[in-house]
Image (spheres, rainbow, N blue to C red):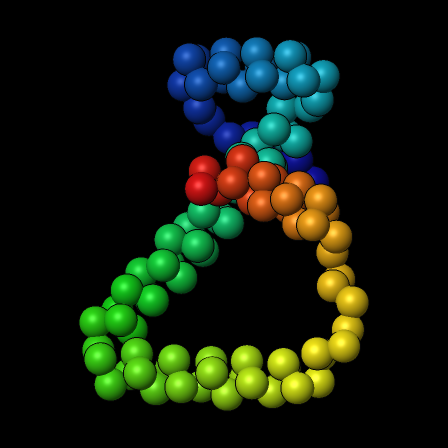
Length: 103
């Protein structure tokens, strides 16, 4: 189902220009923009949650202790496992993450 969304002329022109340059429908460009916006909002929220957690020394210590327990458990069972990704694949993943999230 298609729905009309009103935008100002400048935004409409920009959207048409991007869509034409990429050879995609405008709706696809909008979908990608909204998806990126939602991901960005999610990660900003995660960062804020961690900042709040760090602001409470007792809660932060409890979190660190729990992470240490999980790390210890995973080290025991995965010690002889081959890495899931090669170093080259990890570098590619890191580069894509940095490109997508600006880090």
